[in-house]
Length: 274
Image (cartoon, rainbow, N blue to C red; front, side, top):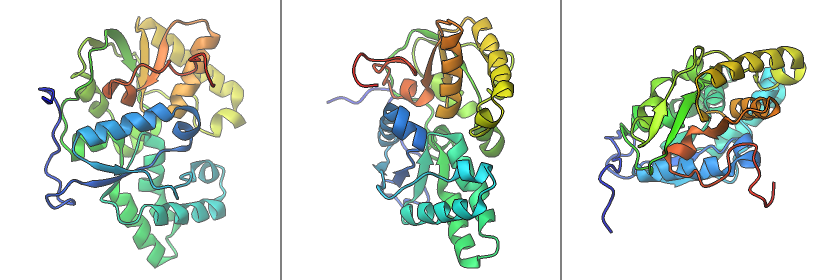
């Protein structure tokens, strides 16, 4: 079977020492419960790029909800489980800037008073990446082999991915290689969508005002499709767009990059199980 001409190749990877890098997928709670297709898309993208991908069964939530609620005791207990679950992998990759940011930026500080665990947290931090950043910055992938998608799209930069991990150009670079995709930027692509995890629960009216401004910006682009790299943001924006009667659809960027757009857009039923 002939490989596609634009099939990406893995870059030089010092961790792997000439073998395929062994990568663990951090699935994330929202992907697991609401959008498993994103996990499968992430696996496809990394395998296409030359990785050996595994999904550790012992993984749990990254602890971000507890952390953002000020519950350091439970967050630390959760972090210990995550650190144990991802031992031995060259990389840990999440299709979420917020979960990857939690592990990379906040885990080491949780164990400031425990040198052994702090060292383990720092080790995991050094191996953890957001999906598009991993593909572009680590594996040096500059094109994907997705089928053409004739759509005008706009991209939302989630707060954690952008501000904690520097994820900005990586998804856009990969989208450039998908035939038929026209990227139209919002006026405020970097402005929060109002989700913020527990924020939207504690401050519902404020969250609704923020997301309403975001959806207005989305509609003004004339885009058919809204893309982002975090399911929390996407669920929030997709829900608001539907309540406003908008025809704009929403997908995780991994689904487009992997050519897995046969599943219904976020928030829409396929006629089977919800």
